Length: 309
Image 1 (tube, rainbow, N blue to C red):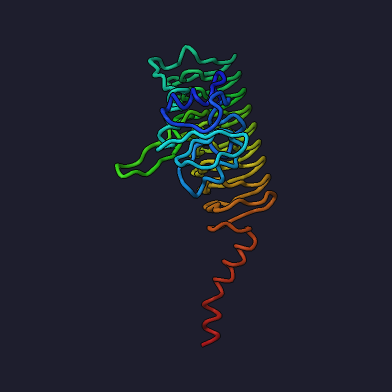
Image 2 (cartoon, rainbow, N blue to C red):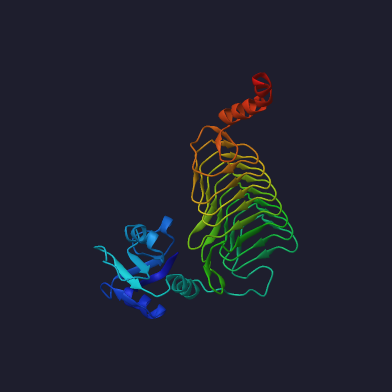
């Protein structure tokens, strides 16, 4: 998430009422999660396991819950609760604005786009030309949809990320201030759910087709011309490269990459990153030929036991 103007380190520290280490005028341009940070961004970290990763990341401002040595060229925001204060920043820079109409006056809808009854289109949404949005689709604020996109009934674009911190009183949600971006010529089936990024974009690449009842988690990036079959669940922060095929009921863990032109067979659990250009099957995931050989050999076990007897 980029701010609409440059802020100083002192400005941000005042906003969240914390101390800081660094030049008070140190420039701050935005805030992001660690996997998408750039110079000028704030990243937060609240667990010792990830201190080094955050301090050594591309982010130049680290919101942290411990006084540590500040890396050269960076600044620190010292907070007793970075998770809480990251939420404060999201609320300040991307506040929720309620809508009282089915289609927001601030939405931009292109030529020849058909909007069926009972569609909700939120604030700041952009929809391109020649799209077809079927009934009961909900398009949350700031979603961007390209040209010639078809979205079938009941689909939800832009719900919050599934991202929580466990506390003694329950679970605190990390507030989502990102977007969903749907590129040209994408087809989305009925009852799909595509969550927005926490601070960045969840992206569906040009020409990709989603079947019914597909879930895409926050900050996931799906490439061009992918095919994703029904009841597939894709976790957050996944990278799916171009021309990947995921068959029905595939599930993935978060933070992995599926290489270009990979084919993942039905009901596979993608537990790790996999290379492109190969076929995969099973849980944990393996190359399909090897997995099918193993299953064939398992079927021979009773025969082998009988021979041993």
